[in-house]
Image (cartoon, rainbow, N blue to C red; front, side, top):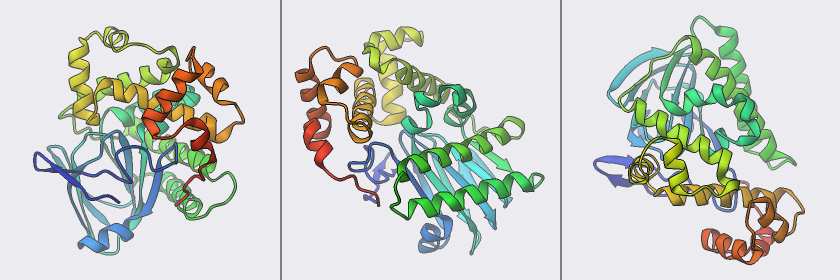
Length: 300
């Protein structure tokens, strides 16, 4: 993990880099709570992740969670969901059993899973603290899914990325179901969270159409300048960078998981000139499409 960068007194963790991890076009990470927390006396100080969804699941033990201006203590089994831009910290009891899952918001809101998006949008808009004490079967299901996910993450079997992608959505769906009936929203920046989530949803739907910043601003009934401030607040980047990052992500996916030529990828993503696409891709990744395709994907 890169060293954290301090901003206005709150640590901004660039988990495996502010961009998606290395050559991996889809960022998903999982670790058990003990691995990180016992190194810091079971305390995780206030920090924030940009453009990432985090799910903390406590199967056994105790956790005190601070989210924005809300503090709550509860025993496992429980889950905490944290959208990008939400300041949070944890204090766990020694020996706590559970997992921390972190995923890029582009993965969580992938247009390929549009039918389920309305379930996941709630997790992207605001934080939730969910008690599973009265739902032991649901807690066992999530814990089992996370154990399988951690096992998959630690290995390099064929189809690893797809398996992690599916398991992530299994966990997200189970947590989202619980959030529909029992949730504690931090709400300090609820409207802004919701608006930013709407923006990322629009990017998912229209990045192939090459919408301008003005198009997105009009769809959100705000000025381009206000949209840019919103993106800077939640992602630490201007609006254009977020839009271009999504196009580059899809290009990486197509180059990694299909046999399509660079020109075919360019046309698929709405570029009229393959040469312009190559320049765009090299600017975003420091590699041409052919160089990217010939570089092995990191799986650690």
